[in-house]
Amino acid sequence: MRKNKRAVTRKKTGLYIAAGIAVAVIVIAAIFASGVPFPGFGGSQKNAGTGTLSVAIMDAPANLTHLNVTVSALFIQNSNNDSWLQLNFTDGVPQVYFDLLALKNITQDLSTSAIPVGNYTKLRLDVSSANATLNDGSTEQLVVPPGHIDVIVSIEIKEGQTTNVILDMQVDTTAISHSGNLKPVLKATVQYL
Image (cartoon, rainbow, N blue to C red; front, side):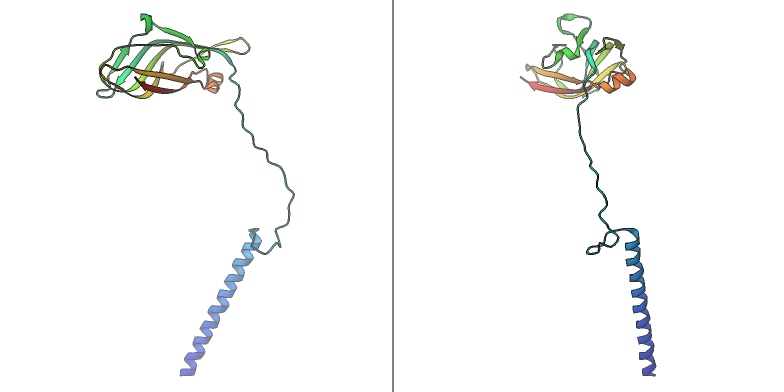
């Protein structure tokens, strides 16, 4: 009986080893057939011809000579109650007109207003009209959806202190040329004096 148990155990072990070897051979054959490189074996991996990849980046020119914007109202939002406070334009004018492309590295004042002490989170420029003059001299009327441009800010107005905010407007010339929309990216720099 003892010999039969050993013989059966050896037979089972031999079958397990044979099955393991067969599975290993099948897995290795599948790896070679799939083309996955196997370290030390260059069999199916031949030196194929090479090509050249060239990657470059450029800044496309802004195909504009003028970008005229008329702002008809300027508001600031109070973070405490989300209310909007209208700011007066400099010199008491009813609206402000500017050519954005003429304001490279210079600023144009929009408003100097006394407002309540507190925290403010957004500026809003209502735009009544905008147009772009292209390099070929043609003019295109632009749309400002939804009629205003919001700028997220974090401003604290302190009693007796002046806070300067400079808006840096960067124009999306692709939106202008493809859809006639003025969709600028605005950054606000806040200086406390």
